Image (tube, rainbow, N blue to C red; front, side, top):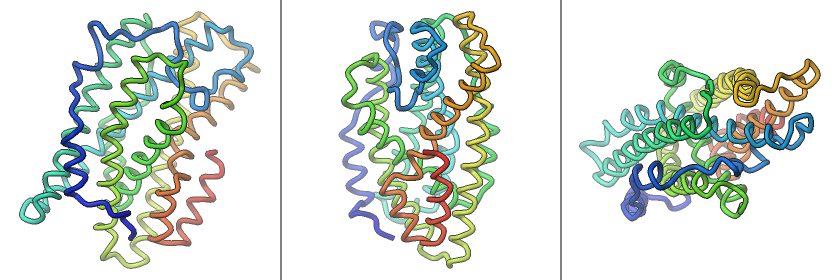
Length: 304
């Protein structure tokens, strides 16, 4: 499989040049600005909800911002043990591979810590608690119950998704809360290296698999995606309640139907479509199995 010239050594060297701590990014003299949106409209999808007031749409954007970083923390709860399991057999092999994978795991643990601290700061400033899907450990267990290559493909999807989000929607957006944007930037800086590492992981895992095993793994990747999609549907319902608690706004039946349709598609694009259609992800799938890549592309049409 094409690995774009990535190597464990060069990724490790790049990772070691990135040096930030959780306490440098959140809390104290770095408060969130609740007068500004947290997410780009391409993710938040609040503007079509014209029955909401500007204040209510801003609150929903920020609720979606909380959910965005919560989702990253949630998926990193299965990525962390997955990477550690992959690193273990490397201990007596390539030293650069071992160090790069352990650095990958350490950074994922740091991200989980960062997103938990963000939630604390969010709830302090937002003023009302918000419900999110979970619990994370149960979701991690369900994902890790699939074939390792399916989990690696899911992780690769998420890593390239993160790159796309920052580069295409967040980096040049001047209207977002600078503090929230800083969290996304620093997360992206490390995830840029993780996408390269996961490309190498997928390559090593698939190298000795036959076509049947690869097709099975891609089918299981789609199963994981279906599980995520069901969770996103639940999150839309939670966000209706989250908005009501924050603003006192109760939706009519017609408003609720519109809210669900708009927000469901927004969540699908954010977490599924934007990763499934990333050129480097589709390129990797196409090399593994052109037929299976076609199946994924067909499913992705409903997520965009």
